[in-house]
Amino acid sequence: MDLRIDENVAAVAARHHECARSRRDFLARAGGGFGSLALWSLLGRELKASQATGAAELSASNPLSAKASPFPAKAKSVIWCFLDGGPSHLDLFDPKPTLGKLAGKPLPGSFARPMTAMGKTAFTPLMASPRRFRQYGQAGTWVSDLYPEIASCVDDMAVIRSCWADGLTHVGSVCEMNTGSILMGRPCVGSWVLYGLGSFSENLPGYVVLTDYPEETPGGNRQWSTGFMPSTYQGTKFRAGATPILNVTPPAGYATERERAKIDFLQELNRNHLASRAGDAELEARIAAYELAYRMQTAAPEATDISGETAQTLAMYGVDQTSTAANGRNCLLARRLVERGVRFVQLYMGSGSKWDAHSDVD
Image (cartoon, rainbow, N blue to C red; front, side, top):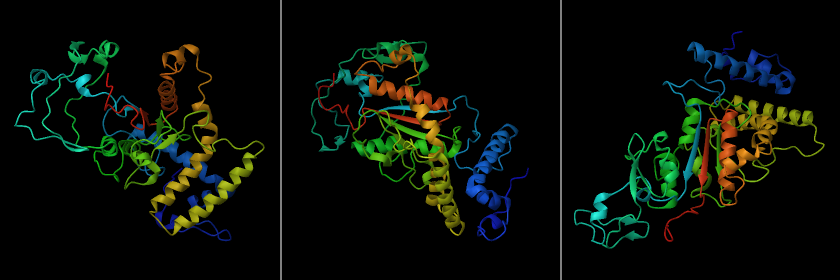
């Protein structure tokens, strides 16, 4: 079956009393729009098959469909644990022998006075890290005495020492971590990954954000936005507690068929509206979001329900301990999500600058 559609024909939607002008037009109206779901399914299957043969003609049919990587790769998904306001690298992986020698002395004149969020600092005496460092593993990676367990498996990690940043505030720094710029308005890395590789899941968001505190992260939802890219690729924040996604469970006694009919009618209006507004990314994203939301009613509750996990698994993730329960639960959810095809999961640990290290650092 050749599913390629004449763009000129598909751009004009036929009215109800008119004959369908194309197969896409027919499927869009068949069953009040339900046939379009079959079209998406066929396109998705053909896309997955095309990856094996190297064909990519239909890769643009569904913007969230999985795409072949341009480079060979073993990794299929990303779980990013971001320690918002975490400990300094000077106390973890980055020993500074020269700083130890200069401890108690003023900053050498060859250095400019450092700029902070509160302005330029005075030439106060330098302070060396109080931690003790040793090299571990075959790679000889430096690790401080704060991380004895991580030191035991440090060969499984990659420590990048070439990174630097110019952000002075929480919002700007977190934004630079996500987008590469301290200024809001650029797409975040999660959106780029979803845009470039798509998602394996048709029933869950391709990019999910999890936080461990109810307070807003620095910069809020702009940190997982798409910037100038289509909104389809933005992150979806899951809430804590028994209902990670609001309104995903229909009220008792609500007929599924009735809800499907309402969505079909709404989607038909949206598609007719889009027909004369080709390239309206916001409208295209809304149409895709309605369909995803409907499918999530079945997939999301199952994916976020950890009641079936064993007591041993919950203990391994720290869900059974008050101090680690929030992040342990998020890590467990992240694993369950990527197992179900979600491409990118971002965990904010200490979200809302809970771990800001101004005092009581130890």
